[in-house]
Length: 160
Image (cartoon, rainbow, N blue to C red; front, side, top):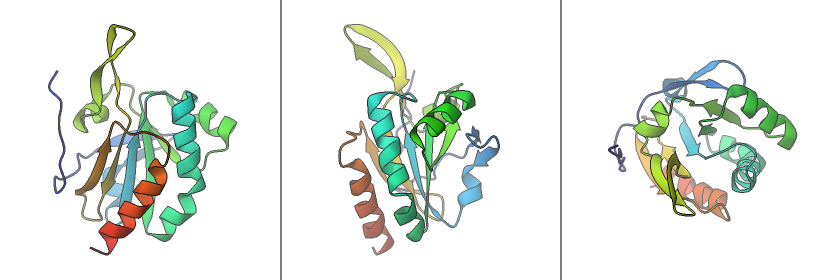
């Protein structure tokens, strides 16, 4: 499978996915705003929980900067709902069970663990500018300190 590699300045691939709030959420709904689009492997896993908690804790700061946070994983809406309720998350999570958007953004990749190969989500974050273009990306994200790095980069991009 060919990996789609997005670079700064590329038009962000359009999408419409069902959200944890039970409605379709589309990229074009947010044109005119900054979008923090992050992809994560699995609801409830340690790293994904820490990342979601960190983004939730910073939601107000991002909103004050004119940015919306959207998390995407292959998990179902039911799984997202449980994940949000269990961890009291304040962010919108989108479900991509067919991996279409994950593939468009190049984050559905062949991975290896304990000698076994499988396809899965490579933890990644994209900042999309108000015109709908990729402004910055992180691939193979380490959770610790990541949300702070995203906030810093957003401010830098807004004042560039």
